[in-house]
Image (tube, rainbow, N blue to C red):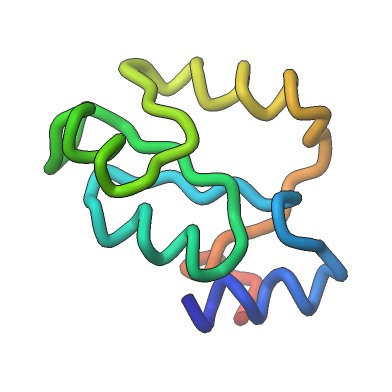
Length: 88
């Protein structure tokens, strides 16, 4: 979770202010270890059940549901991810 933690520090974000999405149970573990809200996506590697068992805070079946979760949480700012041109 080092890259995610660096992004949180760079943008002065607290635990729970970042959403981490992924299709693998390792993504859920990574997000949890970095203090992020985790979102498991079912169109990839693992099933909804496996993602839930790994601790996903939310499991979605369509990309639009990620935005719905963010809007309900009040997360209205976007922060680039670790693979972006941000350089983090």
